[in-house]
Amino acid sequence: MSANGPVPGSGPYGQQPPPPQQPPVPPQQGYQSPQGYGYPQQPPATPPGQPGYGYPQQPSATPPGQPGYGYPQQPVPPQYPMAPQPGYGHPQQYPGAPVPSARPRKKKTGLIVLLVVALVVLGGAGGAAWYVLANSATEPLWSVPTNAAWSLSEQEVDGTWFTDKSVIQTLSDGVKAYDRDTGKRLWATPLPGAGNQACLAPSVSDGGIGVVAYGASGAAGSHGKCDHVAAYDLNSGKELWHQGFKVKDEFNSGTKLAVARTGETLVITTDREQVALKAADGTRAWDVKKVVPSDCDTGTYTGGKNLVRTTSCVKGDAFTGKPWTEVSLVAPATGKAEWTKRFGEDEADIAISTSPLVISGDAKGVFALDEKTGERRGKFQGMADKYHVLPEEDGSPMQQVAGVGNILLMGTAKQGSTKGEAKTLVAYDLDSGKELWNAPASNTLEYIPLRGTGSKRLLAYVTDGANKPKLVEFNPKDGAMTTVVEYPEEVHTHMGGSERPFWHNGVLYVSSVGASVNGDSYALVALPTAAS
Image 1 (cartoon, rainbow, N blue to C red):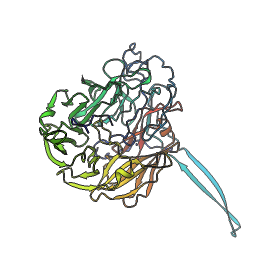
Image 2: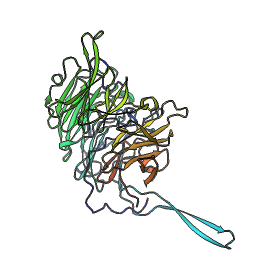
Image 3: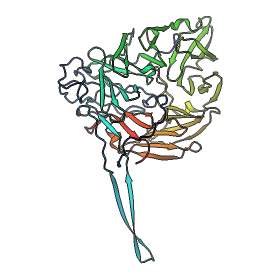
């Protein structure tokens, strides 16, 4: 950690009934979509040479509200860049030709069941018995294809938000809203200016406002800048404001800006400046330099349910003085600390989760704090030595972490595996810090723990190569895994291997940039959370 604080970015077929009529489960805080075990995701974007989301292009001949409105109307040639080898936490995406424009797929009504009939001869009985074995997968409620072509410059973002009527998805070229029950597109709003692409979007939407960071697309498939932020009214799609920020980012890595969003406040940090703004109008919320002690830097902010600041401090000379770190729970409206706890040098570097509150540091590993008081809870013995723990450093909590009751779940990979990336899901007791269990590990598995389900069940969305993706539940005591719902394999293969699940009112919405190798690509899928 530098004296000025760390630099951001340096480091959810059978015959599916209609949606239930009973009152839905009360909405919870939206889960922040996973991004691949802490690694920055680099999914597909608008291909080089293709106009930005509606900018510039000829006026659409399609009336507003109909499929195709808000999209570029000219055809896009396929892109064939050299695909990177999938790595730990990176999306499994491949080059593919463009697919049809986004049109909600109608819900299928037929029960697709594979019947395997076995004739079993009962020895000694002189007779035979027929056993019918059924293997079925529960179909999506609806799905939306994407017409995005695969590109090295694509950056996947977390921003998937919900209103009473719609689910809103942030893609590389803009923001789109769909009816939660039918998948019909309600509106589509491009990013400001031409040739820009989204680089990050926190999954917090208090006040019905979504915030997206973006910048100019890179040339020849490279990643572009990330130096602007825009806010959108999620009910109408109207852009509320946008601003540019000072970002050095000499090599256009697009990772030098962080947005920590809690409530209606966002703290924007770049390698050149740091400001706290109101999401409603983009005006200053408070002065970041006036809310920390004079011996400390302005700090690293992590948003989500809570706004947490980790700060490096030193008393006296930078070389001979006494250094320490601090963790503060910050009031979003004022920037003032509700409590501050002091730790040793490099002991509290960044929050990997803000609810539950979990801190990571180079000196002492990973430990939990009480959200209300800041008092220590458990220290996760050996976590940093056994598993990869890589915070996002983009202002959002680590994507693969969820807290359910007194248990912390983390999708990760084992360190030092000789069989490639041994991905697993590990559970820790938040008070004792003891590892409770870990799920079977494999280099093809992806475990994404779910947040905001409104229950104490340990649920995760699991994919395994070309196999059917599943909604699974874990036994809190021993980690025994039970399949709740199994979905068709297309749900995974048509999403390019980069799914981000969001639970809302008993429905699992899975977002992706799509662009799979099979031609058919999904941008958004609504999945039932109970088997048909």
